[in-house]
Image (cartoon, rainbow, N blue to C red):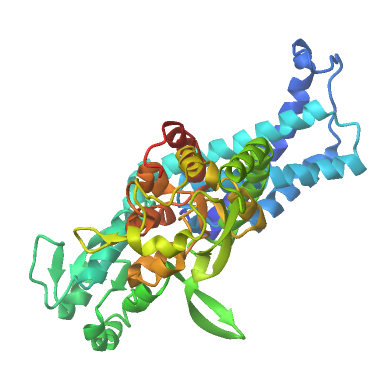
Length: 469
């Protein structure tokens, strides 16, 4: 039986994509004469003949480009939104490649036919992927092919791993329960037994994978557990406690020929980063062109109200803790930093509050710019330069980062953004360093579609000026 995430399924996917390309060519050639009813399509009466070489060349191009973007590695795109995003990107690249070949060879192929071909091929590739997802979710045998996991350890690390497994976007992961010698609270987890019962439990529950998630104090038990499972046909995984030292995610990488654990791996992979960067450049440049009159007007009113300088270069902490200069229109009086201690205060929980609605340092024009978020417009230059992204955690002030707890530093695992999840949820109603949970939610659930959603919601929030000060 065909199993998902297998080599056979990857080959089957390639064949389906190749068939989609061939059918797309045939369909576009067949339907082209009937499009005379559309005014901007040139009317033709005779049947369209597509060179037979294209029926061989185009499927090869599609499959090679799809393979280069790892589309056939199903584990990389467990979420439907991520698979759709990479499918769109791959289709665009394949279409550009095919158009280039047509330009230098078969120029008699019309543009209308090519557009119909690209759209129909994309829809076919998308359709079979949707159907296959539904099939694997609904198939009665799906449960027998799922990965059945037991977590060794019921401490905070074990609970975190278990929760992550249960919330995973994969239909073939199932958490069976937990094993721990010192288990006491039955309400916390499904306790199956002790470590000495591990082999029996693996057989009884048909377990396929065992995840060891023990605290530092129990690390000495790892060798014993691994020996228990040595003759068992299960996968063994170790959730290391020092993952807390990582920004968000860790990777095994080749370092001078030596496999090493990268504790500072980015929370997004290379393909997601490529899509995000391309999106930032396209949308950022378009937004900068539209915002240019507002940039000039804002600079003028700042100068007329309080003189030069109209723009500030502030040191901020970006991805992986690197410092960079963030651009911003000046909205406070000159030398405002000298009066910082006069506005800082501690809230009821001892958290430092460094900005307030009635900050006396903000100028009259500055308050208006903040209300409309126009003071942030110069950061579009940061986006184009690559030091920031359109969407991401806001870049923090260095002296506040020094007060961060270790877990809060995980927000630096992704490029900082002009706007983000916490801005559309609360904006300045709370300082950004008290919104780390929102940033981690964004990092964990990142997709280009979430970026688009946040940008749309940002426009709505700015319109009503919620929390802007």
